[in-house]
Image (cartoon, rainbow, N blue to C red; front, top):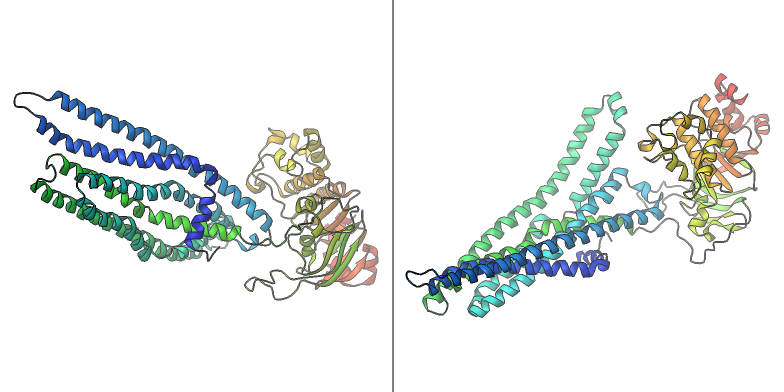
Length: 599
């Protein structure tokens, strides 16, 4: 979609309008009626003077003529008001409802892309796309379609009326209408460029600002404020160039539009005078009406050009949104996927080879993480994965969850490959607790219910109790309804992890995946979290990734992964007796704090 033509983008945008097409038709009709009525008000008012003069008799006031013209003006003015209300209400009703649908469509399109595709997108740029770009699409529906229809229909009606006054007015006015309707938009397109670079730079600016705000503590701590502000200014300056080009072209177009309108009106007046002097039209009735009506017609015809910059920005924003939405997911749901269960909670990796982003030269790491990797974990066992960073431990969890799919080999749960599960059924097999479990800016209750939204209040509170949260929550003024804050800002690290564990307990999935859930906690907090963790894992197949080795000494089996392969395996006692990587690292970590934890 990134290289799609504007016509294709427009067609796709219009498909989103189909559910509201009849409302949009009402809006467009109301707009044309409104503008034609405005032209009629001016035309009647301009002609009224001549009509009154023609009917005037010395010494008498032609009240019948005055009231007749006033009635006509009042009637057309009323039509203007009613049509204006209908146009504004229906037009914005459609635009805002489509915007809401767009946000939902973007969100649901992003879900199957996460995290494989979305990891390449900075959060600030993502926010720019879903918020700013969606807002930028709104003018396409509210301020582009209607002016485009009016720019064609209204001048056509006015030209038809001018033709009825005298056919030669068609030849005089039509070229100016064509110029303002079609030449001016073409001109602004040539002067303003395509605007793509500007929108890309805007995404970079938003991402940089979001990054700077999130990292403000470290920025201040290291005295880096000036350099970041200078970099923000530099990025903003490059964006400003594209913005200046876009809106400079818009300003030029508006100035030229005023010139075209002025010349067109003068041409109509000049030719009208010629016709009036020849007696072919009325100088007091027809000529003022022609000039007045032409003013409305010309300003309507340049309405499309005046909104052309907004239209182009809308197309650019739509192109950016569609380019993200159209990316193929890293894991596709199989057409013959069955919703049947796995039959067993055992985990199997059979001859698995995998490389991240192997199809993307910019993001590829140039080497496979796993090569012909095999592993079997029996149902109900607790297996821990340890080893240096970057050896593929988290990759195994990603492949189980189908955040990515293997390049070769097979990942299975029980006797069923994960690719044979519908994605929603696969998700039900796992409860995940990671070091970065996300806490939403909602209540503690809502964050726990994230594990199972349909759980009863009693089930939710039981999960909180098992996670060791109930005593602390009882001390809060609002209890379970207390807000967690943005990203859990009102909670400690241990409280955030306990909420993540409570979610997992509430979900009650047969397989538990723990990805360094205590890595950032102090020892005392870690002890409490581990107790909750043991309650979570009771009777479940559990796969734990840990760097702090003292937290997994009670695992049924410990696997040491080095460079994508299992270098050592066994219980804690067996591995300590071998004097390999595990025993060396455990000894290094075994300070008095960890010794207390083990005891």
